[in-house]
Amino acid sequence: MEFEDEMFKAMMLNNMNWVVNFHNHVKGAMNYLKKEMPSFTHLKENDITYWNHVYENEFPGKLRQTTFLLMFGHLEEMLYLLWKEDKSSEIELAKGNGVSKYKPFIKSCLGNRFGSFTEYTFIVNAQEIRNSLLHIAGRVSMMKNPEKLEKIIKSSKGLYSKKSDRVEISVEAISKLQQSINELLEELHLSIISRNKGT
Image (cartoon, rainbow, N blue to C red):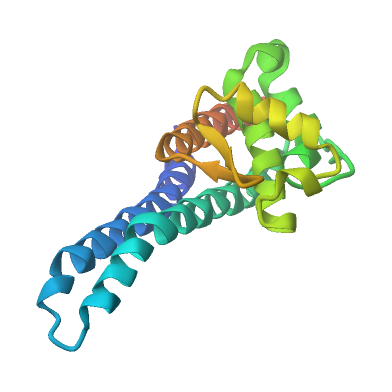
């Protein structure tokens, strides 16, 4: 692999690692504050109880949602850059948004593996979760097709759940999304390197 290709791959991994580092750093900071809070003399006992509740029950879910959305931002930027880098063809993007827009490009790179590439399927389903978070604060019943979202949640084996009509994301879902994005982008990158050498 040439230097530019190695640098691009390193950049893709580094950008994703920053998102993961953000999640881990903020989670660590919250755990530290929760542990140290009893020693904060300016806080009353009611304040400590309140903030313990927030750090245990409210902020972790928001952090997982934010990390999930940041990973999708990374994915969409990389898909655009990879599509622009593909010199072997001028594949038109589909109408729509997000990953769906790049389906023709992804299909052309994966070839006959497209239908069985489980990481892509996971990402497409995760995009439905992302859309619910972005557009309706994760409220399942307000989706255009709530049955589709319900089916994704039920078949996710605990990666996603529903509480008070809102989608919840597990830590495992974030790890699975990270892995799926990394694998998809690496496959696309390798395909483009191979195709560009043939031009």
